[in-house]
Length: 293
Ligand code: GUN
Image 1 (cartoon, protein in one colour):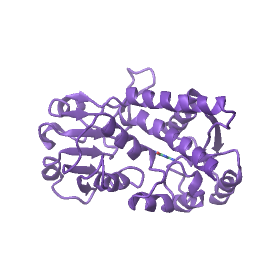
Image 2: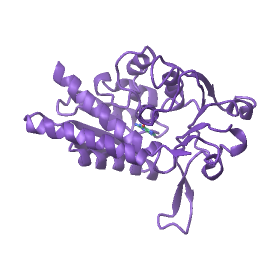
Image 3: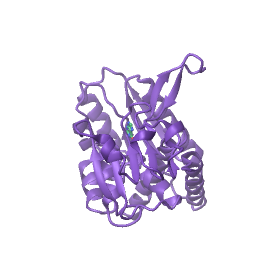
Image 4: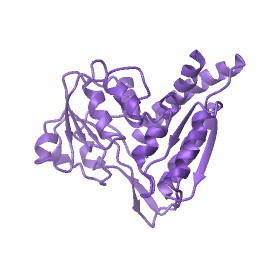
């Protein structure tokens, strides 16, 4: 079994980005600037956004964190988005999801200028991705592709089973794994809450990508020998023995599934750090695209 070490690969990517930022600085160019909006006080979301801002500092990007109260109206959030769209100093920005229920997420994502949409969630960018056009690929799927590529995991002709059809991970992942090229050329099955006999499907999979948020969902009995397992689940489980009061748990029963797997991502230290590294990569791309204009 080979661990797909997202922590290490993400460090490599951040080093590559930092070197590029240094080159920009040496040439007297403006460095990339990422902004992040967070609405409300969800602990996990605050942690994720905090990690994104910290990663910006690490590679030499500028960053701006905008915290808005949980009572923020859709109109107020749209106004802030308009400000960022027209602020020439900001190269890319994200609105951390989920949003409070008084706000229509789709309206918000559509308000983000596609050229600054470094999450790749705007319908224009999502459509371009599906059509194999150059665009921002959502950071988590982009990170998974990068891991598969850097570990040279064979995907052509393989049966890839994606568990979960979220717009952030499952749906884009199912599209990307079926695209022409490497990583891709897979035969893809997208499973979800209405899927029947899921074990019958997962036990035929060469590659399984779980993005469910149900701790230890994927058991050893559900997979075949030599399967490649990508665990996108990040759930906080209460644990009083841990100083933080919780432990991070993935969707995969790692202890038992890893015994059968050829490649597997750990949680933490797998997909999570890759997501952040690829957000930085998209922000660098946004900066470079704006320089071309
Ligand atoms: N919430 C969970 N994952 C993500 C992500 O990749 N981007 C944003 N904006 N929100 C998220």
